[in-house]
Length: 320
Image 1 (spheres, rainbow, N blue to C red):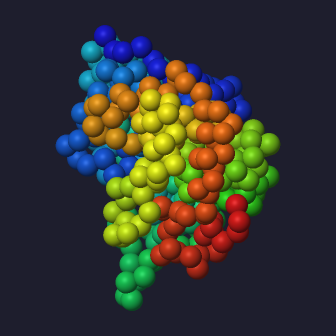
Image 2 (tube, rainbow, N blue to C red):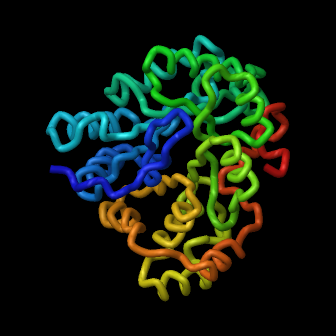
């Protein structure tokens, strides 16, 4: 049998339950993510797996999910699976195409949460990262409200139990809320002590939009990291807090998000770390600990998408 569920849940605006803690799969290599997902569910009590078509590993995630469900260790309805519509599928009709491929890869009849991965679109039909002749990113002007209508259709068909957005700023969230027939229930974006995002979290919370934090550990394995970039996990003050609490720095950073009511999806493919990351419900951070953690805030993004800064829907051109 699978390990018992470790995570309490957040009640989304539509009444559905979403575990506050889950496994991220961005950058999990083929050959590793299958084992990671099985280990997370069976050995460490994870019930929430965060996926995306562009991670190019959903087929392995799907194989793992099928095996744990067919074994009887967990039921499908006990799991919460998120996926995302990629930038080259922003046209209304393309959303269904991307979702069908995702469901086939994940070997599922539905996802629990479907997000628009980014508010801006890329040119469609030329691969996931289309380029112009000058090697710049080939974008499209498709309005993310058209994409949103595609998500609403998927929701009405029962293919996505909940729908939301990812990497949307406050103005973009507000625009979706104003125009949506089905309201977004989640906004997923980067948050860690280098990028606390207090204003955007509060903005979403006031509108009953739950927040999921990705890169909660600072994304130390991001492919574009440069030598000499600061490493959040090595910050001496954070190491000191962790040592005093007899916890790892990762556990402290995960606990920080949970303690402020933010859903969090740390990524790992190492079974021991997957287990350790889940052991965050048996301690509390003091107000002094939180003040130390938040003292690192400086607006640094691990995922800044600088290649599309000129796009009209680029999300990071306003403060939050």
